[in-house]
Picture 1 (cartoon, helix red, strand yellow):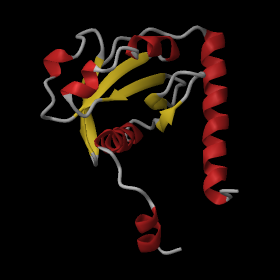
Picture 2 (cartoon, rainbow, N blue to C red; picture 1 turned 90 degrees about the vertical axis):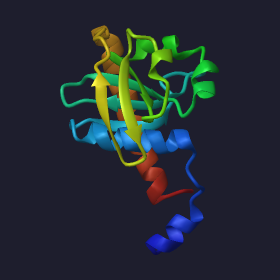
Picture 3 (cartoon, rainbow, N blue to C red; picture 1 turned 45 degrees about the vertical axis):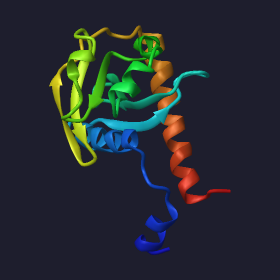
Picture 4 (tube, rainbow, N blue to C red; picture 1 turned 120 degrees about the horizontal axis):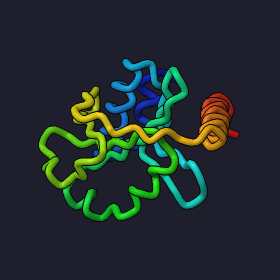
Amino acid sequence: MSEIQLSAALPALTPGQLLARGVCRHLASYNFSALEEYVPERGKRVDVMALGPKGEIWVIECKSSRADFLSDSKWDGYLQWCDRFFWAVDADFPTGLLPAETGLIIADAYGGEVVRMGPENKLPGPRRTAIIRKFARDAARRLQALRDPR
């Protein structure tokens, strides 16, 4: 299938998905591997989970508007799944709304910049091992699904 046919077959990305794409591109410049819309456990879905070259795990929640942020009351439940937590918003977002004790990434569909590093809260070793294994297996499944959608 040509690139034109493939892009015509894909649905348009939402504003949050465009932010996530830019965040993932930026994280790649730090040698992080990222998965979008990742489920670390049943009932939880993070916008981006990223695995760094030294095994560090970051969670990034992408907020495309004030209303999107205000409707999110579950973000602190993601802290147990990462070493650092970040919000990703666009340049027009009112960043004063975001908790000061979290990281901040300003992004668009094509890239981003970490403007405030999230504080480090290192995961316990057994949890880190379990998350990394699940991340690797889920990434492999996603890749295989692209090659063989059946």
